[in-house]
Length: 297
Image (cartoon, rainbow, N blue to C red; front, side, top):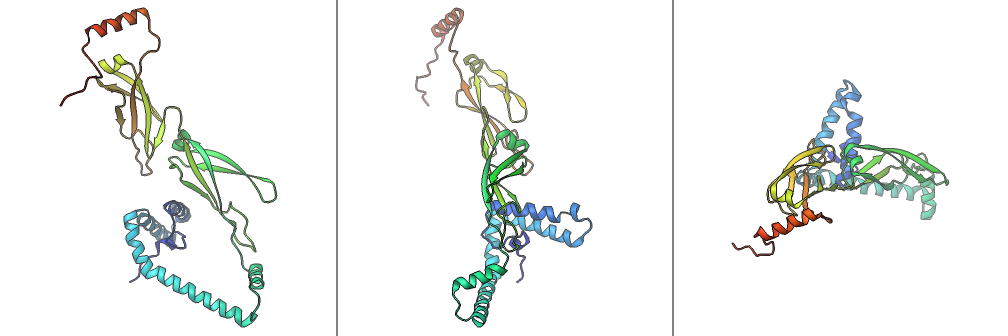
């Protein structure tokens, strides 16, 4: 049986890649082989289709587990055998020409000739909820090995998820012996803004209302991430209850959005006028409402 090596198609060396690494690899390969970049190149078009097919399978946990079982049997096992064969041949070759040279001397000879890729760099930056939602440009600075300062402009894509990584190819540490430079991985930490809190793809906010608004019903404006929405407060609403607005939350990465969830908090005025005090006293006399009375079913 012949199956496509989806990991190799995405430029990955094995099936140990995380979902974030798969997403990053997919973006890089899709950009490289996109039809808009390659014109009428039929070969690039076929590769682009394979890239999409590979990502759709590997980004789905259920499909990936099923695929990995086949990959391990038909491809992974073969790769391991080939690697063992190559290592054995190299060992025989080194023994034939260098006899019993010290291990250190062998490593020095290999090091002088073989190109070595530079190390990857991992860092993180903070973006506000608004910056993450709409996208933003950031500048990061870090020290170089020679004591200087390196500045890199980073474009945060709109709708990036919390803790998702951005990969900048070739911006890591320099390679040796002509090897490629490593990559720079930037983890994005999303910071909540005043009265808007991100949880998954839902955005939470506090909705402050007065006791009479809660008792009588009213219409109020709720400020979301990108607009103000008018909502009706139902009569008799309680503190802690929520009003949920579909498709007004954070971007889900599939063209949709989560919910904007307003948590109701009934506020009592800290300072009241004499007229208000009299009205409260009158309400106390005529109202039979007792919030401490246990409800019976």
